Image (cartoon, rainbow, N blue to C red; front, side, top):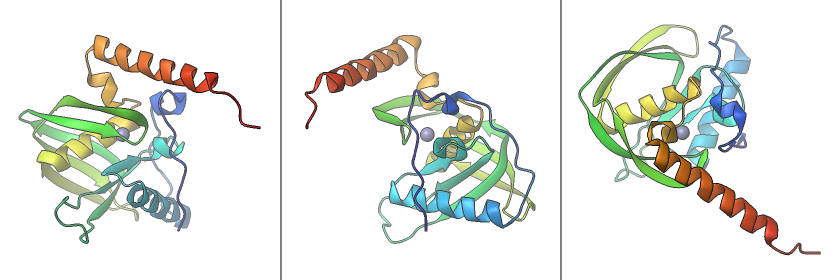
Length: 177
Ligand SMILES: [Zn+2]
């Protein structure tokens, strides 16, 4: 079991477009396992490889519901792609890479996703509601998009400013010797 460090906005790794996975060996399986360990320890609903500083197209999600604390349903998706989307929903999102912010984001209500499993077999998945949001959020990460990029420019800028201020305040704190 390995918990990987999660990188935070504004780390530029988060804004890069990730490359497709082409090798399906033991290294990939071990990395996917580490990502799941990291996600569950965080805890979070989803994690994309760029968030642990690897720009490859792999995501893990934990679809367990809040009222079922002992039931963990996890899924690993390699090279996931949204092949169909319909309907609209507004969902309050946060992100393990974006500190101290939750905000409403417009998403599709239902999505269909094609992906490969860890052995490279093609699979598909349909999801709606919360699970559809998690999938859209994580697949965005693979294209270098964060949920704050879906906010109005003003809201996004307010967040960036508040981060800068926090950093400044922190830098001002007296150094402990
Ligand atoms: Zn995220």
